[in-house]
Length: 453
Ligand SMILES: [Zn+2]
Picture 1 (tube, rainbow, N blue to C red):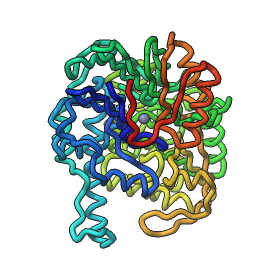
Picture 2: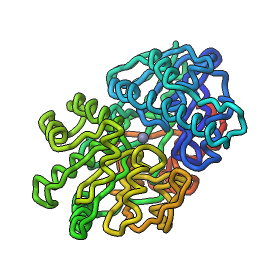
Picture 3: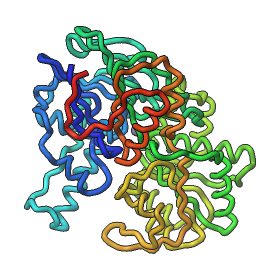
């Protein structure tokens, strides 16, 4: 069996790994590139293998950097089945059409502003293409094996990153070799997600390294968040939290309500301004058996949050002048409704902007966290006077210690580890740490490299 790295190398986005033998091709994850323009441009490059020759796709989780290219893949001729967990399937029904909508908006914007090389810029895919891709989905339970194509036996184990997230185990029957893809790996002690399940067997491991060079620190996220909220409220400001719609938004709402209940922060209005995050929250509550929160705790989030659905309501939020908390997507401020709030709230020193997780290089979030004094939104520069925080402790990814701890919990003896899904430096440091701690043969693969497994 061969493994080829079609993405997710040297970057945290665009995860795509191809497994193949002489007769079959199985793609693990089919992500979109995000962040700096040179990466985003890759979304438009010809897919490195003919999509019609891929027999099946298996997904680790629903985030767009792992699934966002699926509608394009189907549009270009993929006719097989897309396998994932039930949670991932339901979340994709929200995320993929939304991604199609953004593509259509971008194409319209490029046409209006005439900055495309093409006279009539086309979207990479449309909402309709996303729904078409969703007809190829088939969901599976955790721990149950299935055979997407003959000879490839696949199963999912919980990865603790977001609802439905999984490590993908592929046993190639002819050689009895097992390749495990970690996908994105969650925290050992997350507020809402259970810890990732240890991996017991892998001949080859493909491991993420988002925080390969960083630790989240000892600060308790609740204490840190409470401090920020109290300081901001003390000076009469508003707390804006750009958040990933799926995963972190639900965790933040839970943390905020917990702090209020424990009287650690005042009882303020809390707005969730992201139609996608609202739908994701509903799905999250429906799957309460798969995470730490009970149905009742989910109900508390529901009854204490003002869900902002329409554009009119969203615009109205910008006229609020009293302390409140606004959670809005996207998490790296690369698009979405949060941009409108940033324009209103950034110029005022009373307000706080709290980023809640990894900021990919090149995104507005990354620049603001780095401390720029102005930021470009909708073609204009806006001064950054609000206090900007980056709470890595809220991340849905384990840091390198947590990753190593997780690897240690299993009974792994891989003959090879490929370190992916990280910026160049993070992946390389992770590779070194794995070698030092376990003595395993670890390598950072190059884009398009193919190896025998
Ligand atoms: Zn993810």
